[in-house]
Length: 159
Image (tube, rainbow, N blue to C red):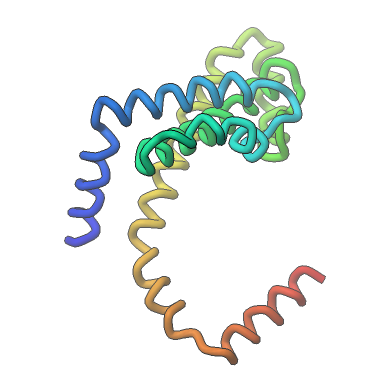
């Protein structure tokens, strides 16, 4: 029940009028910049990071999250309408989205991209909220041998 109480507290903070305004501005500006081909979410956040310097921490993080999600959706817009992926995550969207746009169904393709992005973000956030505390407890039990094994496995996987 503690997880649900924390989620309710988080939603009460995020759904305040001031934070919703910062989220809207972040999504709007992030989408406007993310539509530009070749500019992905990380570059968009790096360019717009100075907008959040004078904000308190909570609205700044909410605005940065809005910028990230807006620019992620903006990349799917260019891949659907122009067959030009804005970042690597939008490459697969070019395959079906652009074909739908050529058939005159660009609106449904953009709506599918928006709804699926919202659903995936919501499910991912809930999974992180549910499995985060047990994984953090397991991570706190790691010692030097476990860190060595983890680094060795990462190097082997990368090679």
